[in-house]
Image (cartoon, rainbow, N blue to C red; front, side, top):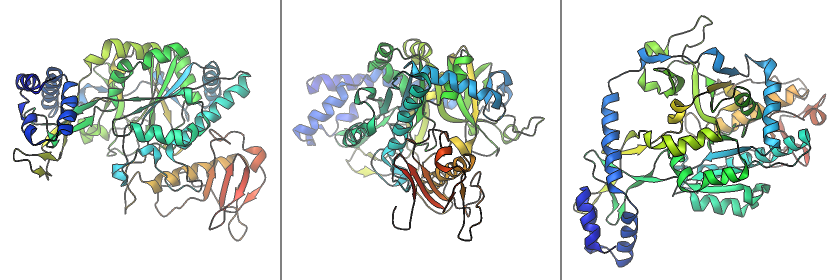
Length: 504
């Protein structure tokens, strides 16, 4: 497209300022900028901005309290309240996995910026004795699950792994998997695709420039998933493989049970088209969204959208009334996902995130604002709950299944490499005790389990069990029953190893 036609398009969209430094750019920079601008539908973007700002200003004052109802018991499955059904659910899920009907879809668009690294978050090593990264741990859980399904049903099966990256993480993620031979998975069953990007805008709807010749762009939120599934051929790929259920989760949870058979089986038995895994919210002021009904439809209500009085309400059993803490962990039926991609995606509204966005001013100087100066627009993966005909909620224990990695280690910080590492080692310690093993201290006394690390001074025993040995605590008896171990242990596919200070 020649510059005059491009300028006309931008003028029509009210975005002429994007070419204000055109004459100062090198031919290569001009070519890159032209390429970026050609791929944009400015009318659509301006429409997104208008709608997002209207929705945002309309919802600022209004709290959700009067419109909310808690999750009814009949749609809830719980690992603590439904113990007698867990085996059934797990068997139903493993049967689906053995028939190659289950896929997993990983949301991995984030960089580790808050962790102080520039590479994809899935490549982060939290400091386990094995130094496995999040990607490696999750890949090995898939391998183990395929093996368990094969053992139970005597048929070889595959769990395809769809990995949604962003423009910033795609190449590094693909290179990392290639370099590690896909961690033993079949390369044909690991499918990478990319979420969309949207420009950052000021409060007047003008697109911001990151440099004189480059737009300020940001991923379109994890709800950008649905558009990406449609325009990158992923739904067709799933259909070709015979996928019937899709487990969607975020990369940063070190405890995630990838394609959790019990969760999938629960959804299957309930005939659900959409299921949300939740952890019990116990502190009313915890800044986590809760799954509930609003005006009769299921959705996630953020902590900021309700009053403290509602957040503090309790049921007769003493639990918080709105306690279904959302952990971005969902199961969708393929048919529901297809409906979302083909019918409902255009109905999803963008959420507005006000941000401090560095930008180039009209004089060409880079400005780093100290207060929010613009917005990034994003959709959320849970925005589609409202369209489900049969929606279910599956409650699990936080200490067994949820420890996200978000922040770098520092005094009193939450969700850090240290908290993630401790959560996994504490879980593995409990697995070992359940299987009949014991840890002993230097005096030969049994060390008790720490069910959860509520106090930062409680340090877990160093105990790491490879996912290739056990997916969820199963199959450990023959290795540990009746045995005593020093508190520095690694169990992997080569055996049981006592760790010493400087290695195995």
